Image (cartoon, rainbow, N blue to C red; front, top):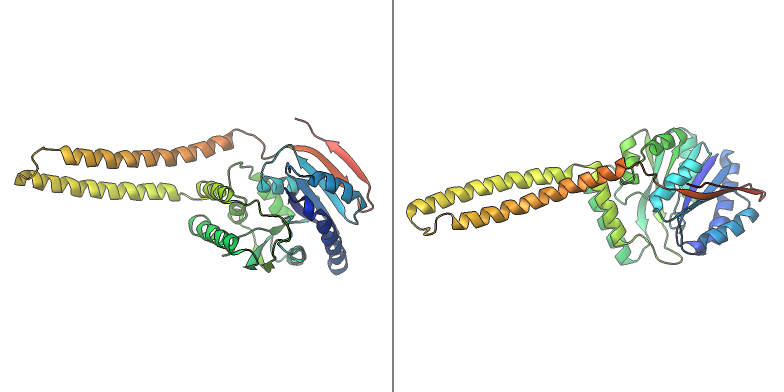
Length: 324
């Protein structure tokens, strides 16, 4: 079975099209590969009526599905992890609810995984039909991500992926609350493949992937997967020592030449200002690492499931509720 994970947040208007597309994908998977599909919808505390629309549509749909509710909004990566944990398939795939990634990509993932050619398959975006501003910001974000965090990722970044059960199990073992799911995909290792696709234009609404979220995610990724800030601090410290040595030599020469009338005044001001800035920068870097380590040692779950419902292809459903 292929378990497809779909995080839902402010995407209620996509529900009818999602159901139609997934019914078609399930039919093709059965005919082409002899594999059944289940679709795990994770409602990540969406303020719109995503849950109500799914709860009404799934019992009538020709697909096996799960509907999982978070107790509040935990973010798309937490929703993906919840969906992966709930999935019961031998293979897993993740797709966004806005359908900008073509659903056929799930079949490409299944083809590679079922032939045992790879343990994880990432979508390699070869083009995007987005507005110029969105395209520019996305390209800048992923360029920085590749340069600062994970050089191995495709140039266009990674938004969707598929994996087998062994890879899924290892991914779920990394229960870090302040980290990067994309970074974890590449950190784990295993056999990796890529599936090319063309990103489709967004049919409705606007993306919730704002600059603020991008910067926060890039920051978490940098501190979780690279020691770049520490190396920068060492570089700045070394440069500061060289500058201080040169300044000291210059002040000594000027003093001996009788040019400086107030001994030590200029050198003291410059030295205090420069090394004060270095100390502040160092405290900020160390504090960033300490805060993330503190978050990861709290033992809090990445997400909390409020309720979950399972739907059979014929429309039967049963619900279970988890409290705590």
